[in-house]
Image (cartoon, rainbow, N blue to C red; front, side, top):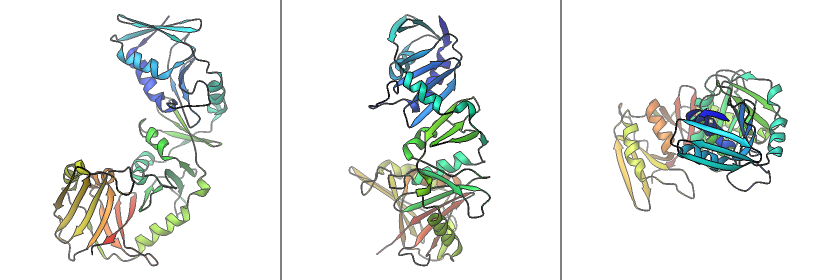
Length: 360
């Protein structure tokens, strides 16, 4: 019999949940937790997670969703697990349960092909997860959805990039990194695990290692198809042309966003929660609407603008909250060849370009 602290088992299962297949899969065992000596694993052909778990004598696989729910509900500090042929007996407090083992042979084979034991690990450059989190804010569904990493124009450091139909985000890293492209749903799961310390590339897979030994692996998109040159050209152009106007977002923006965002929803089929920004001489007007109503608030500038910008831009509420926390600078520019003006938001190591409309 193996006895584990409930919190230890719960934490290990929680870390591995991104690799659990929740829909249909051709891979038998993709919906299971796989126990091997010293580790707990999951694999669903898009994400794989392996995390250290000391449970000597516990080997095999069980339905992940069932085990997670059961352990969560058991009212006891310790969980007892005993493998009995094709079954696993689980007990804790007054609860006893029996679960059928799942054949996870194919999952084990797929995990072995990841080559984690022979991976060539490199240190992640500083600022990686911060850049990912900021660029995730312009990762709404589009043909280019997801997060890409590419060399910066200086050829020294790498940068994280993302876009949707109206925005471009670029976050600078503190060192070089191999080029890659992670799909948006994977980014959502990656952000749940905290800050990795090392990475390794393995064929179509990216492996990220954490301080506790956990390894998050994900399949990559073809980074050669990501328009890095177009991004760099757009950002460089926006940075070099003279500003039509410039300023800093008001200090009261964060609290105002929290109020107005209660009525925010997507527009034109977007699933994002959006707020309309109207740049006026006397302040920044926030406006949000949904089927049940709308809300607005005029936030005064800390430093008055000299002219009336007369511009409107729609931004994600999550980005606006982050912009408020960081007191981002902004400037309005018109790059040569562009049909519209662009609002450029900047903070240390981060730039976002948002297309704007003129108020009629």
